[in-house]
Image (cartoon, rainbow, N blue to C red):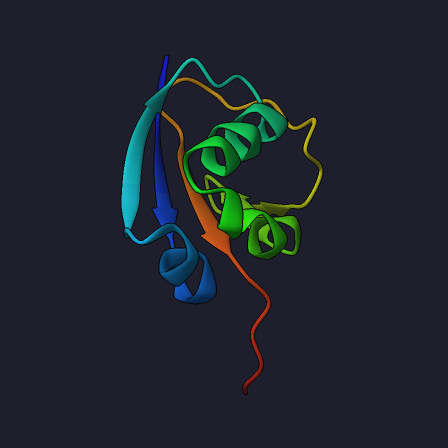
Length: 80
């Protein structure tokens, strides 16, 4: 199973890249753990993020990731 992960704003800056293709991640908790393992300094930013999976927003790290999902990682932001 593969998921496409796209990073925005502070998440993109913290991870140093705009996207990844990851395999072997079955839920958001596993996804976050994989990202923190690759960029430990990103942990505080990722902990505050909301995730969009197929356009549906969640912060629940137990949320399962469907095969071939696109996950958008969105840190909190201000604005109108």
